[in-house]
Length: 153
Image (cartoon, rainbow, N blue to C red; front, side, top):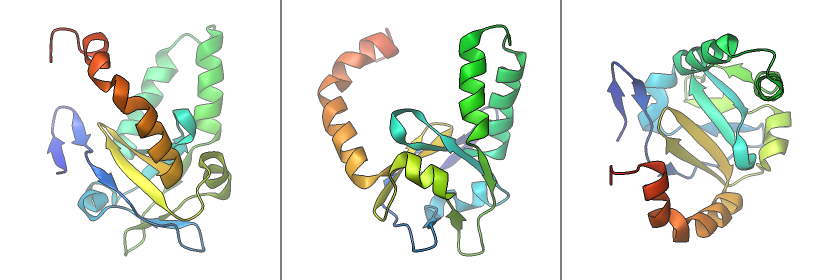
C-alpha cells in the first residue's frame, strides 16, 4: 500500500509487473500515480536497474550531493553518472512515462519489466534480471538484517 509520511515523503512498497510498449512507455503502478503526477526523475541505479524519484526526493538528493565535498573523487564520479543519466518526466493522462532509449539500454529493458517499491524511490528492472537478483539475494536476506538493522529486527 502507498502511504505518504509527511515528515519523510512518500513510501513506495510492493512489486508490480508492467510492460514496455513499442514506444518505450511504461504504465506506472496505479497506486503511485497521484504522488508522481506532477513529475519524476529517472536515472541509472545500481545493479543495472533504474531509479525513479519523486521530484521532491530528487531535490533532496541533489542538495546532499551539492553539499558533499567536490574534492572527493567518489562524489565527483557518482554525481557525473547520476546526473548525466537523469531524465525528468511527467506521466501522461494514462499514467505512462517514457523511458529514454539510453536508460532502457542500460537496464536491459525490452518488454517485461518489474517495478518495485524501494522506500523513497521506485526501481525499474528487466523482469529476468529481477528474478536473477532476487534468487541470489533471498538466501542471505535473513543474515543481512543483523548487519543492516542491528538490534531492530
